[in-house]
Image (tube, rainbow, N blue to C red; front, top):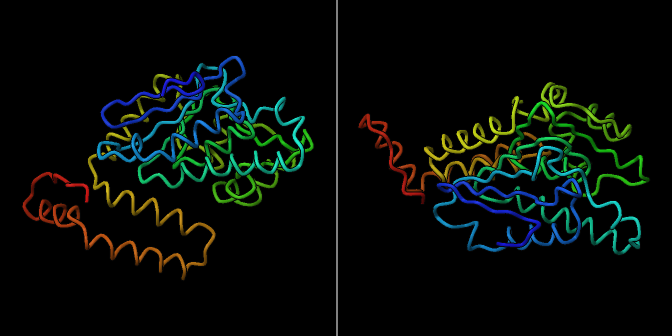
Length: 263
């Protein structure tokens, strides 16, 4: 894709998606969201057999994504606002539904829709410059791309309510302390290198098993333990139907590295 608002690069099966509106702090407007939806719904670039992970980031040091485009939202009708929210929710769900791990790499602001976009990844890495928040209430809005639905699963309902009700911003260290961020780095380069290394480590594991783990965890969120265990059991059963399971167990017994076929 050559559109200016998204930059794509693929390095040994790791696709890096960069939101590229640095002059607007990478704010999510309809154009960016529509391009992300088209990218994620297209089976050709994303579902190829060589794709092993995705890094999601923003251009420049100032912002990952500073939020949704307020200028664009300010003139929307209720119907247009609902459609805009539906578009944002669709994009975040598509990231969750990818069968490969997604790491959000955050430098600078990840506010509003930016924080929601990061939360749709499997986990978040950040630099010490990162700032997170859901400040929508200060604009007479609420989080509309999944903040109300996802934040409490990551940090608990108490922290989620405090952050959303106050619109307060927190730094990367606080975000890590409450469970929103996995790791914090001094520089953007260290963060991106570490994300690539993590995805490379995951790539040595069974891609089928990783995809089933992602699906089982995602489908279990918010469910009663009994229901979550049933989801896990069904996914566990599926592994016994795969070449990856046969290869992985055979390699273990033969004391050799596995060569997973990916099916």
